[in-house]
Amino acid sequence: MDSIFGVHEEALNVRTARQKLLANNLANQDTPNFKARDIDWRAQMKQASDELSMKPSGKPDMQRTHSGHITGFAEMTTDSFVKYRQPTQPALDGNTVEAHIEKAQFMENSMQYQASLEFINSKIKGIKGALSSQ
Image (cartoon, rainbow, N blue to C red; front, side, top):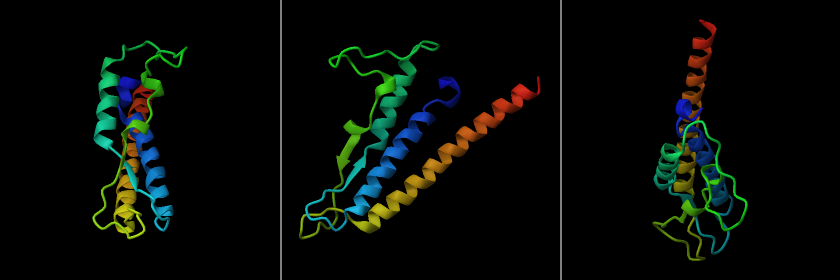
């Protein structure tokens, strides 16, 4: 299935994690010393794309049997790509959440999530069509 969907599955996972992070920023816009965070989307997707291209087709992901083992593709998280947002006007109480920026990022992320879902849906419809015509 990786060859059919490409990195779109990982894109949905990253978009979901980013949506939660942005919602958390908005929920804490009045919390003193709260620092707004966001995911470095390009770095996350570049790593996912690189790992997908290196993954041997038809073989299962590696399993970790010890905490010292290298993380495989299936266990990749967004934690290492979470960065603090640089505010244009930090608040006097140390909070760096700027509601207008967070709301704009939240809406943009929502639209991009929907676009990824529609892409995957069109791929599935194409596969169904190909299978039913035989």
